[in-house]
Every structure is written in C-alpha cells, then in structure tokens.
Length: 141
Image 1 (cartoon, helix red, strand yellow):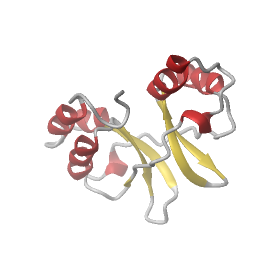
Image 2: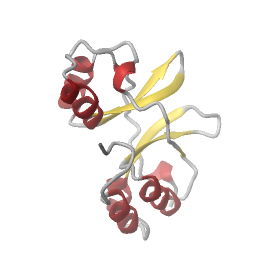
Image 3: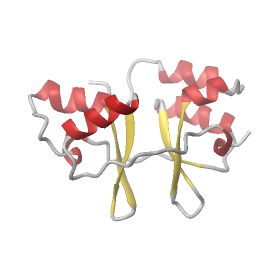
C-alpha cells in the first residue's frame, strides 16, 4: 500500500510569520496538532501543539511569538509513492507521529500519521507506534 492511499490531503500550511496564537486557534478549530510550515512555496519546517507548549508557553513566550521562533526546522518528510510499511518503520526510527508527504517534485501533497498507518492495518504500524511512544526523541527535554 502506498502513502498516497492513506494520507490526509486537506492540508493547511502555516507561515513562519504567523503567531503561535493564530496557529493554536487553527489547530483547535481543525482538531489537529501538526502543521507544515511553508515560506515562498518551500517547506521550511513543521509546528506541533507540543512545540507551542514546550518551546513557547513553558519558556514564558506569549501568543504573539512567531512560528519561526518555535517551529522544528529539521523537516522530515516522505514521498507519496513510498510503501506505508517502510514509512511507518521510519517514523518509529525517527520518533515522529506525523510527516509531510511530498511528490517526487518535492511539492507538498498531504500529511501522513502513524495513526493513518494503524487504521490501514499495515504490518509496520504497530512497531512504528511502539517506537514513537518510546521516551526521548526530538521534542524531549
């Protein structure tokens, strides 16, 4: 099964110039916890609800803080034509729950989550989820 078969296609893109209050409102309204960050038609980062809490609120930064100040700049992504099992395994290895999905031309086409893989009942989803749930990773303090 390919990533394109299970990914979410309705993706909102955050701007580095937006405030975290704006992004938090979008996340609340859409019931999501992750947005890719784009600038001039380029993927420049990602922001999660956890980034907002750990990198902003916990450090005393206000809602007027710009996304660029708290976003993750090391963008991990996958390709829409990759096998779901391989991507789920990779998500476990790098301990992320969601990835932007791009075409081979590196155009954003969607977002895939470890939950999407689990719902598709892929073989690697359980192992990927187990690894993602392991303490540590990029957002650990």
